[in-house]
Length: 285
Image 1: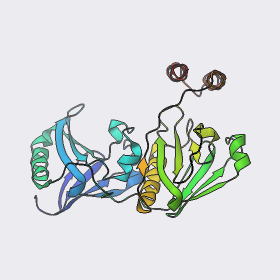
Image 2: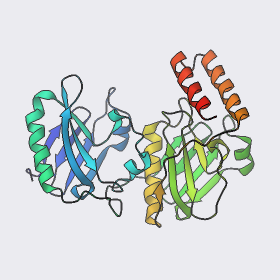
Image 3: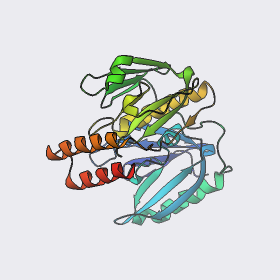
Image 4: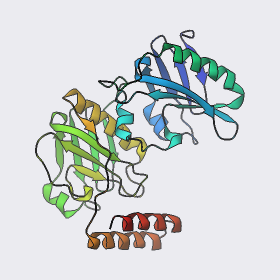
């Protein structure tokens, strides 16, 4: 392996190579994806990496990427493939003139990797608690033991108001369902170990908070989901479940399109966003 303490600095992050891990320190800055400074730094054991790639990037750059093993990182498990490329915490973007140096470190890393199958447990530490964020219909907080949802009167559905504020011990949870705030109808839903509850929309489920325009950004809600998932996994086997939008009642679709139209008229949604989101809704009929 390369000398301990060697550092390869790129745009938005720097990798420090150690004997059994890579310490990734993320920078703060206007152009830095917001998820990175929220993570601060992450120590990724070599046992959590299955491979390393080096490829040309955009506008005179090269991209060094570590491939995390499935099941090794709670953040990537919670994300379930929904992260945009520029928010991938395993990418290091470098000026093209540093390609030779990047290739050297890529080769050094590859020589140390021994496993490429799914990991039996999380190997990368989860984001530190306490964590909290504001969604559209409530505030979510997590202290490491219990998840709390406190509803906002301005956004919560009548079903959630009727149920009241919620608390969920992680020992009672079987998984986390995170749908990115960057797609329509994003939400964070807690899945319970006991009971077969009917499938309901997230805005009607007291075990979920829904995102909206300007609410529940990725850099707050994803580390939250990862921390809850890791804590629940420590209490027993669980899974991060990518959500598939169920088919809905046509009247519900019509109501959502009407609301979307109001946001469009108010200038909160662009013409392009309106067309795309309307098409998404119609596709669910």
